[in-house]
Image (tube, rainbow, N blue to C red; front, side, top):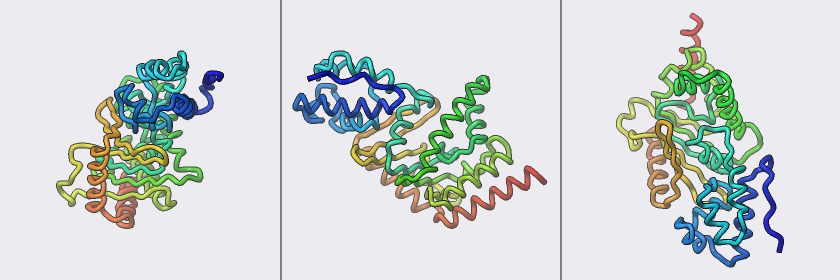
Length: 279
């Protein structure tokens, strides 16, 4: 039987690696759980590799080649699958995001990336990297805009965002940028591309005061939760951990303003920013 082909990096390499992994595993007669034991990971992790929702790391690629008798196929081709335009700590989450059927996110400090305008994204990146050359910022902004294309075409993606009022009131990039940014969020909600709720200050203490939450669901892989900090990020697939954060998001949504009331607040703040920018 001929061995797997080298991947074409221009044609969804993660999906192709996943398909080859499933083929090689089944040829060996192994279940996902059995192969997971060899790599000291869960069976669901193997499923996520096969579905293309998790990035294959070089150390796993070498172990898979040995366990599945695939020569050095995975070791050679995982390099192509690892290429990303996103910051390194977010690259794997961005790849999973593109495969998700449902994304639920609580944003305590800024507008989520999928709903950012280019001007707002540039202001965020400039704050993160005050000495970065402009050309590098151009690449980062372009990658963020490309991510947002998930919402532009025909898609079954359900995007449900709960934003803290603090994210709306922190002036990022200037008042004109904020006016445009909030109108963009409101427009996404009105076009039924996202469910948007605002968690107002008056809600007081809540279940996610320690940080952001990003939950992702998939057709053929277990759900994931993404944790992000300053310059760092981590995907977690432990079922009990994911269930706990799903409950946290449900409680946040219950405490937040209904979508219609949230739109009223977004419109009012956008109008205020526009008037302040152009008195």
